[in-house]
Length: 102
Image: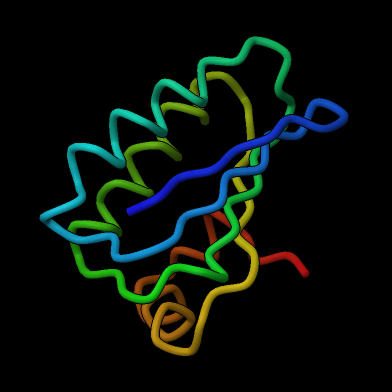
């Protein structure tokens, strides 16, 4: 798992690449929590274009980050999921809490 980030106009962009599963869970959770502590962010965009695989552990990590940011009134948006991840988001209703953007 690789995680890249950049801040632009108070939007935090996080790019995940690799596999988001039980093996990468602790690393991903800790890295995302550290990155999301930037004080001036107004919204977060998570780019999944390079994420090859995600299982239920990955869903839990994303929901956990959503809950933390919701407490700060910071919305999270998802962009560029592959077909497998798109299907997971639709089946689980994740797009209702973390909308997909172009």
